[in-house]
Length: 297
Image (cartoon, rainbow, N blue to C red):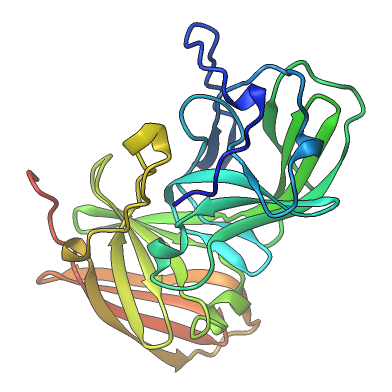
């Protein structure tokens, strides 16, 4: 369940006519990350009043959300493609983190995705809440560093993320998008499962391919909570739609080790998907049953 909301006046405004729902989007290699929030106007209270340990809903009316079609990296955490409720948690005098609540459920274990950043003063005060994305340097191995910038009045918070690049191929009647995750992420998959690819067929048929040390799973994308205006319980992926396969590794001879995940081969035969992904001087060899159809498909 989400943390209690702040009892600030600007969080209690509920005039639908005045409400706005900006959707700033960062696009990278034909995939994207979007933040949805209600643009609350500046009132008597400020973000600096948020007590350490409490969360802010980052807007008004419906809960704010992160919707992404590619993984995002922040520190040791990763968010798989899908849709998640997000809130801002104050963790120190000058530190906050934007948390995608329940995002660890998409991976099956680990920590929720959390973007850590400093809380400071803006160069120019704003009259309402403004959230946006910005590039943060040059792309590295196909992945683009970026910043989330949140401003409310004269308070400004910035957190760094990496938007992961990708390549898409056709496999049978599916589209397979393999992500250029840093090779060290794949090497440490026994500690934190990794979303290495997405398998898609129609607009609403998307599965994350999650790999651990020896096990692979095709997991349907998570959806943001809808009950109680988005503040209801986080619903994990439907276990009935998850398929489970295996992961093995093999040494590959390359002139230069793969610094990021690289699609090497893929095929679909008799309902079984096979994917080979290179990293460092190894290849992940993934064998997994084709996804189960959703109800009504």
